[in-house]
Structures are given as structure tokens and as C-alpha cells.
Amino acid sequence: MNRSKIYDLTMISICLAIMIIGAKISIPIGPIPVTLQTLAVFLISLILGTKKSIILFVTYIILGLIGLPVFSTGGGIQYIYMPSFGYVIGFLFAGIVIGLGSKSNKFYVKYIVSFIGLLIINICGLSYMYIIFNLYKGLNKDFIYIMQVGFLPFIIKDIFMVILACIIYSRLKIVLYKDNVEEVSLINEK
Image (tube, rainbow, N blue to C red; front, side, top):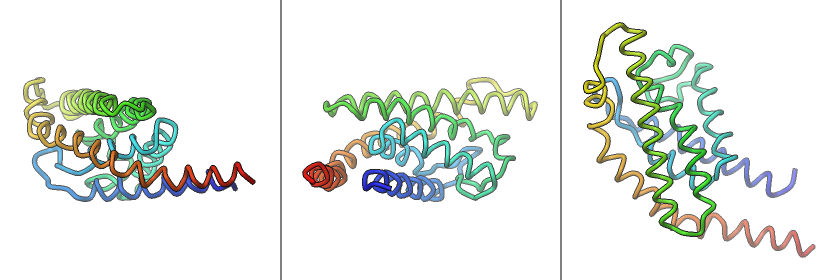
């Protein structure tokens, strides 16, 4: 295995650990707990790009669904019936979009794609929550209730998380890619 693949596997593993830790730092308020997952999603997607983000988020979802307690409130196949599972699905799609934007050299693009990623996470999460509450649980909840439970308590925190992730990424990218660029240069010289 060459050094670049080892580097990629190491980065994916570290980012997966960050994702799991972000899920476990949780404050339960209603059906959707407040976690640091959104910060992790934005940061991971910016660091890894699209292809590796897809690998990471698919792995995260599979690990959770097979029963490992990686989600904010545990794991297992029954998690698909949780109102918050739509947000987890949204992480994957947000990771794709944010990862595509991470290739840009323009820093404002990273903010824009991160905010689009936040929109995607919320669309997936709110839609899924609506389906679970109304079709699965038969609670007959309207969309206003869904917004009050799954969006309004989190939007300020999530906007802050987008900004924080972009700032952290701007500081980390120097460290993350400096050694890798030097290493690739050394390999190419040989």
C-alpha cells in the first residue's frame, strides 16, 4: 500500500472518530438532541472532499445500523424509525456538496457550500421527521410543528457551526496538506 492510500485511510479513520465523538457530545431537547455532529460534518467534508466523505458517511451509517452505538442515541436497525435519522441521511448528501466545494481555492465558496450543506441536512431531516411522525407513528403533526421541533431550536447553533468549521478548516488545511504535499514531492523526486 502506498503512502497516499495510508494517508487517506488514516484521515478517514480520524474523521470517523471525530464524527462519532461529535454525536456523543449531546444535549437532549425534545426528539432531536443538540450535538456537535453538524460541526463534524462540515469540517470532515471540507477536509476529505467528496469521494472520501461518501466513504466516511456510508461507513458511519452502516456501523450505526448494524448496532454499534455511533449515533447520538445509540445504534441498531431500529434507528431508521427515529425522527432524527433523516439528519443522518442528510449528512451524506451534504458531504457530497460540501466536498465538491472544498476543491475551490476561493474561501467564500467553502462558506457557500457549507450553508448549502446545512440546507440539505435540514431538508432531509425535516422531511424524514414529518414522515416518521405522520406515517409511522400516526401523530398527525403539521409542518409548523416539525419546524418548531426540528429546525428552530438548532438554526442559530448550526449557522455558528458552519462559520466555526470554515474557520477551523482554514487553520487546519495548512497543517493537513503541508506534510502531504512535501511527502508527495519527495516520492516524485525518487
